[in-house]
Amino acid sequence: MHSVTTISGQSRASGILRPAFTLVELLVVIAIIGTLVGLLLPAVQAARESARQATCLNKLSQLSKGCLNYESARGTFPPAFTDAGFVNPTDVYLGSSGTTGASAMTAPWTVRILPFCEDVSRYSKFNQTAGSFDGAYVSYPAANKTQAYTPNNAYQCPSHKNSLPTTPNTDYFGVSGGGLASAPPAGKKPSNGYLWCTGYYGNQNFFSNGAIVVNGSISSKDVTDGTSKQFMLAETRYQFTLESEQAWDAATSGSFYVNRVSRPSWAGTSRANTFTGSHATTGAAVNGINSSDFVDTFAAPASGCGTTTCGGEMSKTFGSYHPGGCNIAFADGSIQFVSQTIDINLYRRLGSRADGNTGGYNP
Image (cartoon, rainbow, N blue to C red; front, top):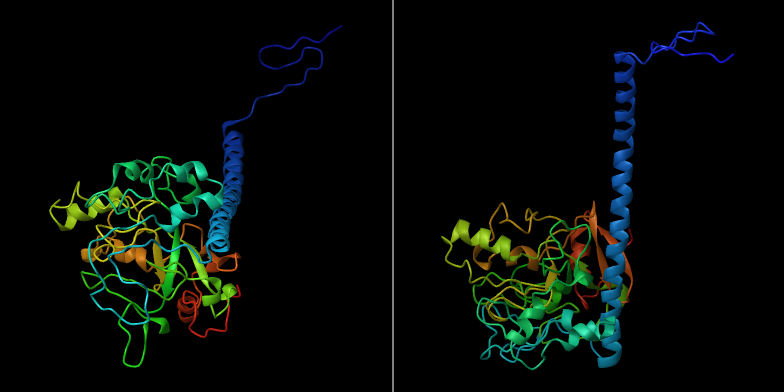
């Protein structure tokens, strides 16, 4: 005969009572589950970040290969961009001079390497003879403006929260040099790790001792320190955006520059012109990795930026949202995660191609 179970859970046949969980027991179970989730969540987050960092490294590797393929085909690394109105790289400190006439900036390195990164289609949409590639502060030929402000995922790190499908930014800069953001003292030159030019405002950071230089024609033969000891491309989290520049302008200039912003992009060159503005896709190894308080590129930096509208932050500080450092591509094509605790003097010298540095980076 089959047993019959009552609503109270008592079996008539067996006479055994099976009560439900008590409230205390239920709360204990929930607490245990919560504790387990708390223990597992950091591991899950770390695994996700590890995957994002690997994706970032792969993207930087592809861009690095594009630069090396460019050099193989053209004989030099891609210049940051060229400008007939700006002097060619020299080992003479220019101070707040350097312009030779009207600005006519050509495509930046980020556009030049597209055919060497299997993106001929995007490259062909740019008009290479349409005139300047400068930001919208002054003018931008319509033929290139649309493309320059069309986001390019190949230049975006997945760990950067503001690198969105709608944001035309880049998280990878060419390395124009390294050293101190100051004029060379007596007996020293820019190649010794000092500024090449300070620009119109006198407080910009133009270096000429790196691999990706304005009007540059640098080849691997010029990297006498050794290509394995030369930064070529580096991660950045400091390229300012339309949002951050407008926030800065509203806070410091009474909105005077709002709607007149330079709007850097992955395909930009310089605000206004080479001599006046901050370069949009290159930087130098000056300040330590991740050392800036410019932590949100959709907002103004906490400490302000001065008259270069946030350009000072991005032109001399590399960094990422990966814990502890950033990915950097060397001129031999290798990619390394460089710690933010790297010796600052070694870090700066790794940005310079011919300063006699014999020490590489050993994590």
